[in-house]
Length: 159
Length: 171
View: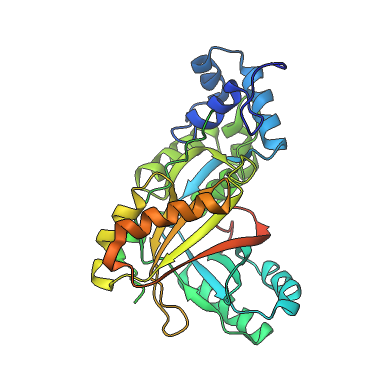
């Protein structure tokens, strides 16, 4: 499909459709990619090749299940106020802890933000305690109280 | 402060479910029969994988199965976490309205920790630039009006680790 018009991200219309149309209701049948191919009117191999390419180019994080927070396990958003000169070292220590998924530096006095997940609340809070003990820095524990927006996928603008 | 609601605790979630979720969260393989591949890894049948996934979708453990796009690579390079201090008694009503805005990808209430952290409503806003994020944050500010008792926007200056929200395979 080279030579085809691409949008700002460098996606062809076909690729944008692949990204947009299957963010939910991915078929639960023996050959799901074949179902996608039939809907798009192409061969199964074309779908697999393009998804592979989109994954390699990091346009797709993954094709898989998105879990509901706190339904089968526990998670929290945690944050620390880390001196700039120690940030790299402490971020590395935090990232190495089991259950730490996202770890971002953010523009605020409270500058290190990460998500911790575990099988239950106790396990998560134990990890936070360990991080506090190891780094000597207080950890802000901000578990969600209520979610107002179901993550139903996100439209990718085509043009 | 942190409500653990008993109805949210799902007891019918066993080790096989956990293994399936762990395997599918890191991504379905790009092969003709992906559930078969997941099944082989766990040591059960593909039918059981699909049946259990269907059951977990139904009881809400899994919210969706599908393509998870990477907003950053797609040009939404500014990712602003807007945080808001709103009256606690209004947080649910306001959260629903903010969460309904099409540019808000996640919207949650979280506990305040005074005096360091007064913000109890979080709304993640993605945009092509910081200016675009600020424009969208202004839309939220207008919507909240007097209920906005203070807000801030935290941009991620560095991604130090990102693997997607996962649950662990074993306890």
